[in-house]
Length: 331
Image (tube, rainbow, N blue to C red; front, side, top):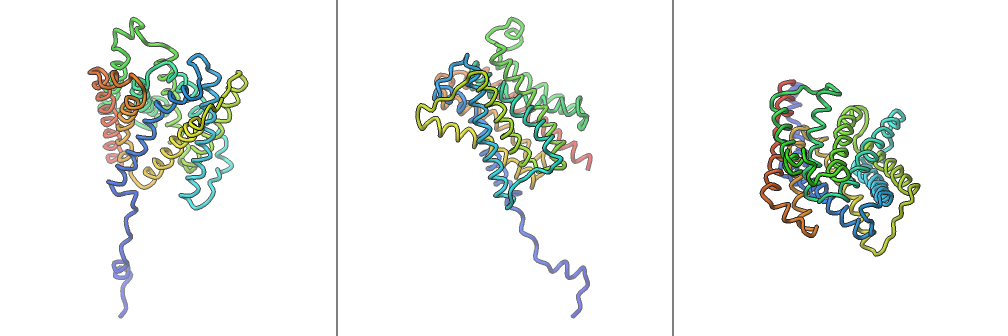
């Protein structure tokens, strides 16, 4: 019997759906990534204790950040190579992009991020750090012009920033100075500016390059730069116990594991389906800071802390829901 091309096509066995597209797997993987990212604040503050780095020792903090991202870079390249079943090597034209990203995403962002966590609480830092989601939207709209501002995005940003202002003590505290410091909350906001800028650049650069490849190499090069700066400034890292080694390896895995798995989810799913789950990131940061850092549970579970966290999470959901709706309209 002779079959038509259409009949032959219909008789082919249906392809099995990729496991990464199943919603329970997407949610569980995103949750795991957010747990990793959320654990960064307590892990870094614990590292300061283990390595005995005081708040005023900027050079040693920079060295610690550098060591973390050298490890994260090599881990990311290794994980990505295993998933791709081939060693990840950037294209010749990508090295300039990797250099730019390493200066902005790793050197710029984490210079201020590590400074901030030496001068503010893990709970406050985790909530303020979420402002990067809203800053990235503003950059995408007004600086790079690859998104349009909508009322939903605007409302989401306003609600999110309201939560940031609340955790910093409200408008009155900001006007009066209050407990806000440039080395603490100010440094975290500076880190978020670099985060927002790097997020937009990755979106542009990833059109021609594997984002995992970009992340891995820029982590490694940025880490080398940070470590060298810290060493030249007279910093030092003393491994007083095996806990120092395990802590440093875990901090490297935070970035490597989370970025690799998040990249896999973005590869097989619409961006909006994955990005909207990022609301769990500040929640995990607050909960893990309260769990592992002494004395921070009072701020985490205070009325203002909980309400600020609610506002930030609501803002993230609204902004990403707006992006999802815009994408459907464009299609």
